[in-house]
Length: 99
Image (tube, rainbow, N blue to C red):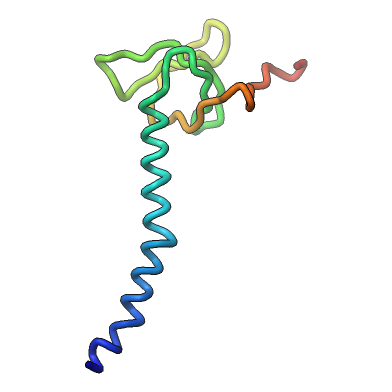
């Protein structure tokens, strides 16, 4: 019985660690994967690098890539995992310094 009592604090630490760190991180990762899978052509997005742009092409042959237009006539190929946020009308992209 003493052995179980001496293990209790360690088990408690593991459970607290699970609920405070691991579980929320998994939830965030699942939400991010869902966001990246639901991006459509024409969506305004923010990339992990901080660049804003509009998704111009999603190729079914390469599901892990997206082409994002960051300026008129300038399209970059990015990993879909680089998309970290879809910009909504409530949170629009600012067009430039003179906006």
